[in-house]
Amino acid sequence: MFSAQLMRIYLLLILGLILASCNNDSKLESEIAKIDVDLTLERFDQAEFKAAPNELKTLKRGYPFLFSGQTPDSVWVNRLSDTLQNEILNEVQTVLPDLKTVKLELENMFQHIKYYDKTFSIPKVVTLTNFVDYRNSVIVNDTLVLIALDNYLGEDHKFYQNIPKYLASNLNKDQIVPDVAENFAEQYVFQTQRKTFLDEMIYFGKLLYFKDLMIPFKSDANKIGYTNEEIKWAEANETPIWSYFVEKELLYSTDPKLPNRFIADAPFSKFYLELDNQSPGRLGQYIGWQIVKAYADNTDVKPIDVLQKTPEEIFRKSKFKPKK
Image 1 (cartoon, rainbow, N blue to C red):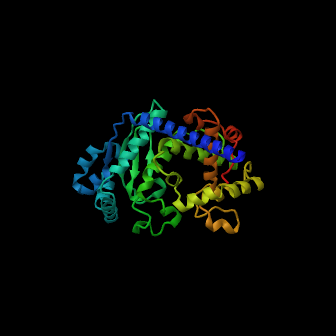
Image 2 (image 1 turned 45 degrees about the vertical axis):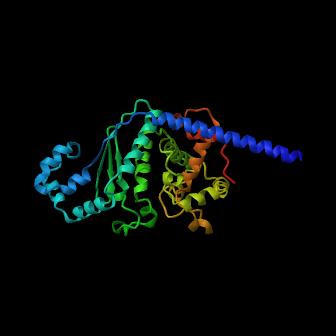
């Protein structure tokens, strides 16, 4: 009877904490939603698709920031009449005729960035194509965001048939905003040292934590670029993953092979065990993310300031324990 009563009290306390957390999150999001964002999203891809080679001057007047004085007009004239480029532009117009959802998500993300960084200025966002250079699908600077839409046509698109499946799985519309967020994260995350495996894990954990702050409307799977099955596998196997890292004394190792095994894009993580083929790649990033989140939860450091802390401080004060 006594233990049952204690259990009831414990459950009520847990429920109270959850409700308080939900209320705080709701208040925060309501406050962020009031922030004014005037976003301009310009579709250069559509303008280019409609332009004939003899209309290059008109195109240049509309988008002068995309034309370098070092590139002769003949290059652009050839591009406007190029068969492959026209096919790419046609596919983009077919698959992504409008970007209303993407624009709303970008506005939401910029509201969050403005909330945490009062000096942030809303950049111009321009969509274009880049011959399916999926390694450079997004480019960000202080005033401009360039998004190459030919890298987001869906993982089974004919353009991606020669791209490894584990990479093509993220070439879809849902990943546009997470990719933009990652590019901004790289501007906010400060870390002078990336020598050890722990350093690498914490660095990428910070990038993912930035996404927690700025795109909370996206799922954890979207943030890290996993399928729903992969994120569930990572969550279910946190304890054996962490035990492996600790028991093999990998945390402070400077072995240059470790980033390729557990940080870089890959079809699976390389424990050199039978479970490898079941695992998603980049599990070092995933664990680093959990460590950074634990640090944020267990300290009074302002969320945006977490991105500036050293890996050693984050790891020591996180009191990280994997989910069981």
